[in-house]
Length: 113
Length: 115
Image (cartoon, rainbow over all chains, first blue to last red):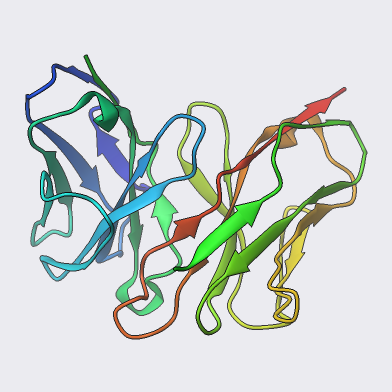
């Protein structure tokens, strides 16, 4: 049973560019959440998707947007990258009825130069 | 707003020592509480959980009890191993309309176990 997978593993971008990160949830899960983890910090909630809609959003600017596809996979898009966007981006999946019990992928390490 | 506070690390122990990592929270109502572990270069793994007051979560020798009166969820293990070296995160999931689903994490506590 495949767990949560994310791609790419690492990414280097330049300030002002746009980036798309991808996530496939654990088999059977229908809800996907995204988190940003700065170095040495705990993850910060970005948003959560269920039934292809954003269900909840954290305190992140509109430059951060997402999408969920009919197969429950998800993308995170960040526009106009800033140096401060450099972080590990974690995707977590869950079942809608147990949405608080989340299973995390290995993350995508984004470096903005 | 809701928040989680963990004891600062790093925590360095000898193998077979007793481990306690303190975690306290601030939340409206009664959140669900979690401990996650992150090994170097990996994502987070759910270690244990408790969804109501006085619940005890346990897994792989680790335990934590949901203490409503002290708003705490301290992680304990009786005898640590070198393989337990990792960063441990305490987290809560708020209750209430429109709040469920997100996890709020503490800053993490790094544990290093020496042979």
